[in-house]
Image 1 (cartoon, one colour):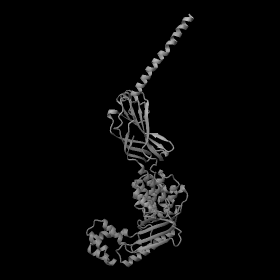
Image 2 (cartoon, helix red, strand yellow; image 1 turned 180 degrees about the horizontal axis):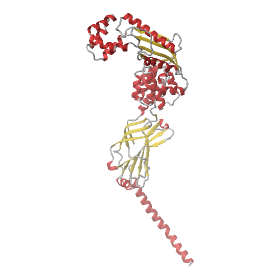
Image 3 (cartoon, one colour; image 1 turned 180 degrees about the vertical axis):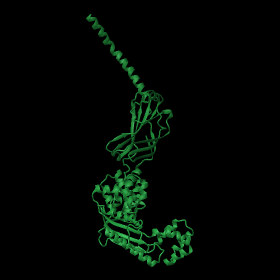
Image 4 (tube, one colour; image 1 turned 120 degrees about the vertical axis):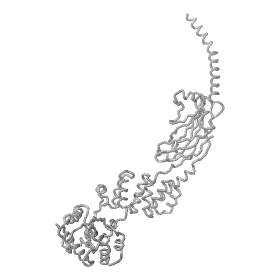
Length: 505
């Protein structure tokens, strides 16, 4: 038994080399045939690139170009894949969505696999059947900006695959040179004012204190005097009770109506104003120089306002007499004689309010250097802050934050015609890319180097690099001009490097 088995095995051993040789020949022929079918003589096809744009836009890097796919004809079992890549000088790479041209058989396989590609094509790819590929394909892609992309270039990788997913040929071609991507908005410069004067403000009003005919003494209980005298007292108390202010002056100006002789009205205006001053001095212990007085014997300007707003007869004729250069007593008598009915109406309705006293409480506001206090005052009484105090608060905040923007918006609202307030508000608007608002503020910013530098930044943000450059060259001594000029130079240099039309052989 053993010998037979041995003989039998020996027979098999003798036979196997011939069988193996035959099998090798068959497999070699099949491999050569399949390789020939799979690869063919034709190599990877060229691709045309036209109208290229490769730029940073905000938080994204954006690629736009037109791909000429007309040369990319492939055999039935083949696929050519075109993949744009962003590559840095340090080797950082990100693949953008690919474009594939599939032969007929390969395209059918792609569809049967529920469009699950097996060639490693990046997400968002565009797949075309060879016979339906467009000649000009408008390619667009964007990807979140990363710092390493500042010094990067665009390349295109072309891959030709055979029927068994074998990679037949691959080429990687640069489309742009390395360039520094478009610089972001330069740092804004916020400015302080040169404040040397004290911060002052006023609280103003009018009181209609009544006096008996031809009298200058104040009777607190006479007619509406309790209310009217209370108005003045309440205004003074409001300021006195404020820990952040100090009263530096109280100004009084008395007026009389025109129905009596001008000289008599002068005496009444002076005497009644002095009586009000004495009344206030009894209520408050002010220094002698705090209260000042003035007077207007006849309030013709006030009478004109009442007549203008009225609908009385002969309105224009009366206004013409009021505006004339006649002696006040002659003027008043002529109105009374020419328009008796209208005069009687004015005497009862317009003249009483003309007997009034205007007043102002002038006060000085203390300066604030505590940030929390400045924040508190801005929320409640922003008109009490100086521009420098707004600056101190803004300088303590994160640029571009909501509170930061609110500080400079409030400052320019409190000081709408101040150039520095408008420059800082414009810079804050530029920082948040609100170019329209920035432009409006810069119209009121004056013509200082600071204002013109902000205008140059606005032109830069709009992409008007030539005008921005011209403006900056006129500011050679401004500290930040040189840095912005260098940024513009980089952009202009890189724009020249961009290739508009190429063919990848």
